[in-house]
Image (cartoon, rainbow, N blue to C red):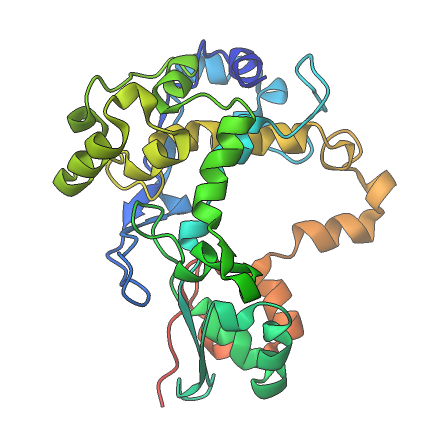
Length: 316
């Protein structure tokens, strides 16, 4: 599926580079390692393809004509979420261990809780204590964890299953087991299928000395490293927040999902959506949606170029 998509764009395999990932040195949450990168859409991108070929058929090229709105295309197979996409999308490491809910007006903390305290209706209890605008402000000014080794949420590694007998579920181990049961290739085999270079040693897999020793102790052979483990340990390209291996699948599946949805391709028209509906979709972004539901966020979001980036904190 992925290869068919990239062949359509003129690539024999997903080989290209983006300059849109910029380091920002953001702080870590709790005691977990910092994520030192974030995506900057203004950074531009290079497709790795001659511009003359990109311009040859702009109406049939997603890089230029844009999506949604481009023609629907299943690329020869019925649409489905592939196992490789599910495997690289295990991003539990982004979830922090603790949450701090603070007041929009002066950034004063109103409530602090762990991830476990948000389970089983915990979010409802938070909303009863903290105003909706303050919840949005707190989440918007917080930072996620980094998708690296030793950064899995503590409370997800001890989910209660049968508390009376002291039986718990380790979701990290479950993630590994699911991939193995479903036949997802190990890390090195997975990269070969993407026509990417394959590490011949643990030293080539990661530049972290501690991780090298730990991986060699546990696996013995780099060919046995599980996909999830490898993507979390892998040395990132400069400025990347996620591994290059996972990024290849993300960049293939993101447009694939849209191209297979008729409401985002052939039927993304004023006739189907109505002119008012199209204007509503195209004239609004996340920032507008937030302000519609929480107008008091206006001062905080006034200078925010991208509402998916961390917001500035209020000054008392």
